Each structure stands twice: as C-alpha cells, then as structure tokens.
Length: 409
Image 1 (cartoon, one colour):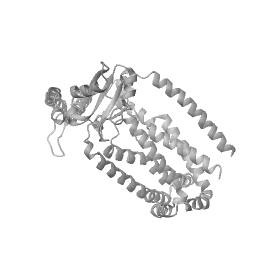
Image 2: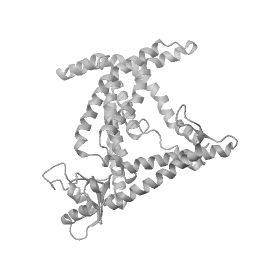
Image 3: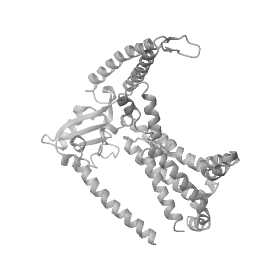
Image 4: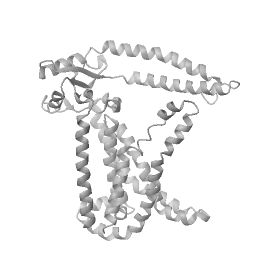
C-alpha cells in the first residue's frame, strides 16, 4: 500500500504541474491558431472561400470573421512538387560528387539494361519539365477555386479565422447547425506546421469504410502478435554464440518480445495513416500511444497469463470475464524473473535512444553532400514511429506498470 499511495501522490502532483503548464501554453498560443477553427463536413454549396465566409457571417454578424479558407484538392500538385523536390536533391548530390571527382562524372541508368546517361543533365531535365507543369496546375487551382465543390478543387474541410478568440471558442460549441451530424463539425485546429493536408482532402463518404478496415487490421495484428513473438524467441534460443553464450542466454528469452515491441509502433502507425483520418501528426501520435499501450499491457504485462494462444485467452475472457483474476493470480507471480530480465533490456534500449545514434549517423552521411547546417536539418527528426512521443510515452508507462505490478504481488 505504501507503493500505491506514493505513486498516486506523485501522479496527482504531476497532474497539477501539467494543468499549470497547459494554462501557460494556452495563454501564449499564437493568435492565428487561437482565433481559428477547423470546419469539417462543409456542404457542397458552401465549399468555397467566399460562400463559407457568407455562411459564418450570418451566424456571427458584425465583422467578426477575418478570413475563411476551404482546403483545396492539391493531391496532383503535391505529386509534382514531390518529384521536383526529389530531383533537386539528387541534382545537388550529383553536383557535389562531380566537383569532388571531375574525371568521373556521375551517370544514371533508367533500368538494369538502360544506357548510362549524364546524371546532372538527367535530373536538370526533370526539374525543367516538371516545374512549368506545377506552375500551370497551381494557376488552374487558384482560378477555379471560386467555384463551389470539386469543380473548384474545394474539399469538405476548411478554416475560419475570427478577429477575437472568444468568437472562435463560441464557434466550437455550435453542435446543432445541421440536422445531419456529419455536416458542420467545428473543432480546434492543430498546429499549422503539423497538419496532415492529405487527410483533410479525403472523401468523407469513404471514411467510415476505411476506418472499419483499419480496425480489422488491428484485430488481425492482435492475433498474429504472440505467434510472431514465440517464433522469434524459439529461433533465438537455438542460436549458439560460443564464448558469448552466457550473455546471449540472458537476452534470448526476451528477444522476440523486445523485437515485436520495437516494430509494433511501425505496424500500428502504418495502419492508422492508411485507413484513419488523423488530420495532424500530433493526433497520430496520440492514437498510437493509446493503441500501443494496450497492446503492451496484453502482450508484455499480461504475457504469462495470455500464454501462447491469444485466441483461447480472448475467448475465455469474453465468456467468463471474472476468471481473469484467477488466471492472473495463478500465473503472474511466477514470472518476476522474466520481467527482471526484460527491464534490464529496457535500460540498454532507452540509453541508446538518448544517444540519438541514428541522427548522428544521418548527420555524418549528409555532411558529405551538404553544409553542416543543412545536414543538421535533414537529420532531424527521429523516426516518429518508434522514437515519437506516442510510442515513447507508451513504453515508459508500460515499464512503470511492470514495476508497480511485479513489485507488489
């Protein structure tokens, strides 16, 4: 009970500090974000900057609306700009390599059997061909944007900026604008630099189908998780490293679990980004944290209770929920040594994360082609699947849960 009371006290104090920090953050929020709302489910007849402004001016009369913007369908333009950016980066690298070794200019092959051509000319030609196309498409989108709906490249989402923050807060409380609950959904916007514009361009009619497909894939991952852990662990136990076998013997029993814990965030975030509408990277990290944490509770903290058959454990839990207490009481006390080894493995994992060795390797690699300032920018940030705030918080919370559970039973 002393442990429980101490942890509860620490959590309450941390929550108080968090509330204070959140109030400070909200007071210092940039005016653009503070005075803006995100509008989803805009009916087709209001899907243009001008029509959207007229609609909100009827609800907020008296020059309270500063600006309105419908999200434009720039998916085709984004593809062109991405190709231009890739070609420019390759062109920059080729020029650096040609300067270092003028006698052997870099070449490019279109395939395994394609003829070798000058790489600098190749990438320069790509940039010269695609840039006018991008400029033309951008001009077309701007000229057509006054027409409501897809004809004007307008999507069902938009942003409305008010002169006063109080009006923006009032707008987020308008929940009965339409009898159709999928229309006129108003919420606080994400950080502008964090927005996933592709998600805001998605067709809302297919959103529900994509979401359920994503949930089915999550369920499939749930049932495939334990067989993969067991398979990797069995292979690791067969390996004999000779003089290093005593060290390997302490790592092998938890190797499968450690590998799956490390790769699980990548699987989850890939499903979320392909099938869910997330709107911002921060919101994606929040969804990842929630799902990743519960996966770890089931397959790390309750691993001994789940055993090797996830399906039977889930079936018994569904048919007789109260049997979980007996199952946990009979199996978990005998697994303390396993979790001692697991926590030791986490020491090395988190120490390596703190060293940021991946960023250092990327920085050194980019220094061969760019200045140190440019290389530092290109080496950031870390892989957000595993090193992002969502998965890091989930892993740290799981370690805390392990210490609390197996330190008290």
